[in-house]
Image (cartoon, rainbow, N blue to C red; front, side, top):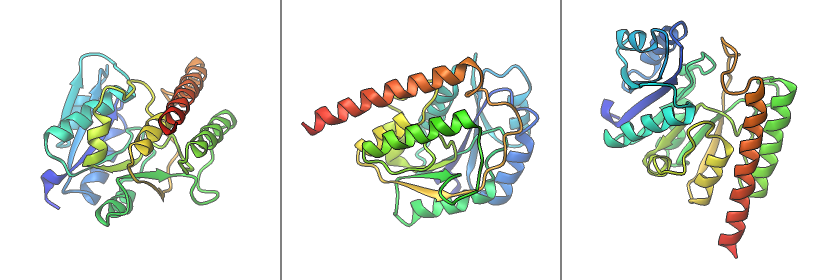
Length: 237
């Protein structure tokens, strides 16, 4: 696969200390991929560090949210004609050495979207009680809609062009694109697979799932899931 066919996306907000190790790891493992860092209004040297390590940098003038940063990357990749995209977070949780396992399922035609799962194999990862309860709840709701997944909030993903076509549409949320987005992909007929991966503990406190944001996150996803399930039932009727 040529360098223009694959793009790695890294949404980043104030990740200057963590980016160098991630970018070096990507170069060692997935060197043929163009690396794109979406600097989502950082107030530190995130963009400058990414450029020094050879990444393409897309800059938001102010912080728009994790989902908005991802969609900026998706639109860039679509415009570049990428055949596959890998996305990893910038907090050090995702190990670039595991990218080939995700990509292999795409190249072998077994999936359109591959999720790196922390929970596909027992005992691989432990999270806090509240986040575990939320994950299991979203997992059960997804199962009701016909989607069998163990890690609905994983940001470690690989996707083909069909997924890019969907994820660049207006429905894609600007804040927390998680299981509601996966359900839309499932309803659109895209094949979703999981691949077991080991993830590190985040090197910083979560900017998505802390304090009152945790409650908002659960509320918003539950609302989106409920609306999605109703829409799915209406389509079937």
